[in-house]
Length: 253
Image (cartoon, rainbow, N blue to C red):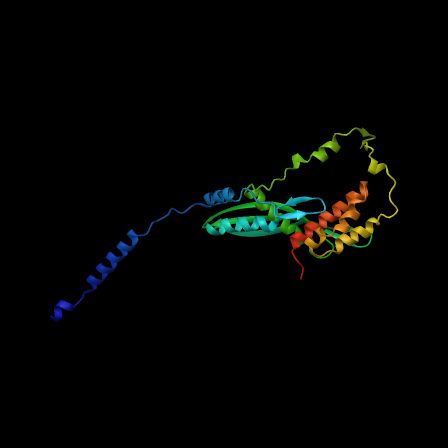
């Protein structure tokens, strides 16, 4: 009776081998995708990013860096693709204004996608301006956005060749090498003495520390739109530069 209950080592090994074979038969093995195949799938998934932010001063919408990152990260991480980045400061200059300086930076960012032993590197440029110490950070964020846009052919509906106003100005008759300005009722009217000085409006724009508060400042927007010509262009560029900087920087503590 005792001999019948004894289990040999060979019996245990046979039973373990049979159990392993049974479990493996129940597993559906999926072929592993290459890095190129993973990136191609990401390209298909994030080919378009919805514009999620609005510039009320110039009345246009744009896709934020956060929206691009959210879609790309979700796709890459689900496929086991990791990413490493390196940044190079291309230029950093100080632009002295009438009352304070603005710092402008251009950054080249390189992203390397990894899966197993495979890797692919892409690069992009970004610029950023700030009156404090955030110009490089803003340039880096912009470079990341456009690097991903180039890598995965992301579209958000903007096309430089569709800039009709710029093309119209370029085709205007020229006098002494400069475009001949077309007279308009607004341009020919005498400036109103109640117009706020340009420097004051620029300071009001840059005093905002929140992008949403800046876009909702209707009084400031109306005061800027009251100016024409070069004054309006200066205000427009100041507004766009500061609004973009605030969007990229995010809410300040």
